[in-house]
Image 1 (cartoon, helix red, strand yellow):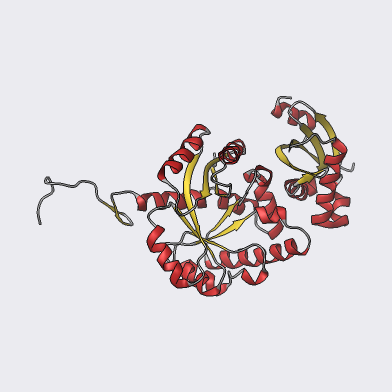
Image 2 (cartoon, one colour; image 1 turned 30 degrees about the vertical axis):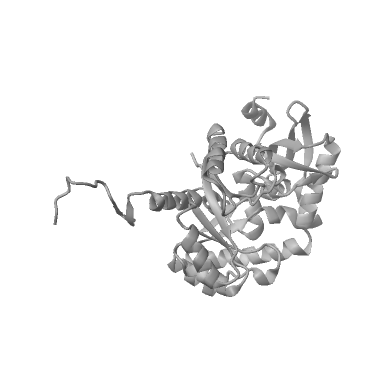
Length: 106
Length: 246
């Protein structure tokens, strides 16, 4: 039996002077991945936004296990979202969504 | 549990709001020690005020001055004047003579090189050899990695990769610092460790450069600046008439 795809779930906190929607956040992260690791790297990342919690601007993002370091680096390099300065901080990383939400107590 | 330090915040010191924001942010991100580059003529009252802001946020405040001399002679003069006034002395090396003098002088704590201008990244094997016999460390600021893009960032990454390899080979400690001028350029220690992967630094080495390295540097300098210090391992423990005359 082939083993299932291993993934990692990242809890993120968005800090921005202006309101930004989740498409803008995803675009910024995708752009950062492509800028730093190219289209080949981005194709392996399997990035997806799982959840956004508007209170406190938290987000949960998913990526493949093998590209976790690449995704963390790309997220840390984001300085602008939708034309205004912003930061996306990585709070936690977990192997399952359930464990991540439990750790964050959300 | 690891303690982390950010040895280079660069706010406008006169702008109290900005200073408070940066210190608060540093505390939120998990730093327990911050250093700010201060003007040479800063008043003691202002330093006390900054220390109080840090104290309120449970962050240890470290005084730091950045020297950017034009010649080696100017560097020596500045070191004589300011070494005992600040806990950290960083030298921004714009020319080779200054870089060489800074690397071999035991009063210099951090060697910093301008992020832009590939010809000004003067940390080569000769520089590392000199630094390895003194006490200076190579400082790598992370803010330019975030603010630059395109070819400038590619060139910077290439230089940092080479410098890190040289520093490791010659045993020169490396310190990572933010160099942030505003809160949007600040990142947490683990985020910096991830970014350091861009120039092939292992996560554990990057975390060391944000924790053990800076803390040992500050502890050593604080001991040197304390009144009873004589030499490494020697300090005055008692003074006065009770000591037997030789």
